[in-house]
Length: 303
Image 1 (cartoon, rainbow, N blue to C red):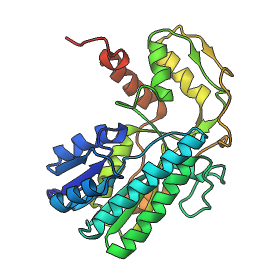
Image 2 (image 1 turned 90 degrees about the vertical axis):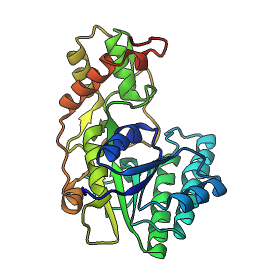
Image 3 (image 1 turned 30 degrees about the horizontal axis):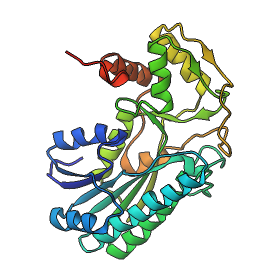
Image 4 (image 1 turned 120 degrees about the horizontal axis):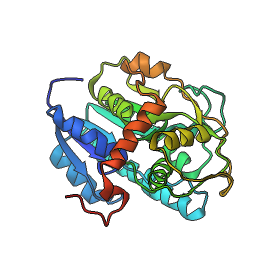
């Protein structure tokens, strides 16, 4: 967290993390360039890097799809792996001071809890495989080009501006509208982390002093909760009359029953710990949707 103005290139700046991070970067006085093109298009990526010459890169752009289909496998390889490779190669001629990559807790699969950064990775989906591959590519290029790499393996995030097609926004929106909430078993436990805490970690990764060239940090909420507990919080906070129907959908194939991240390394490397409890974070998220009816229903205009 520095007062020095930095030139920052952000991929995925219009996504969930980006919509919450970019305003903070701008408020801190940085010059921010959003790359909104296709990372697979080499000429466009190289031109952007050569002209802007970023001092910091946040690589958050990726296809997020947890389905287990062949089509998803091809897309994850094409977008998440090939796209990352193009970006890293473009930076080879104009190395930044730091490359910050957002990864996911899913890469640990059904490994021992709590997940630590040095344990065996067991990615259960094509998406998770692509994130592991991108981590490894970033590590190689970092060593070739001499800049610092910070990989943040982020827990199950939620909060303002998360796409309404994702699970937690769907639960909240249905609860606010008193509609039935259709779910899987609801038994799986996840490490939920509120977006403001994620943004704090991302901002700290910008300029917090680090001892190693490559640093990998888990960013989790600090506790695990069953989905049923999260749904109960939402129902109670919204005072919803929604019926919650479990077992309508099957649990995802190969997905672990429990995820929990150790934040010890993030505290050591970045001085970061989560501050927001699940209940508090859900209250803030619910308030966001209450005050943003056009997001819940795009046909509704705010006056």
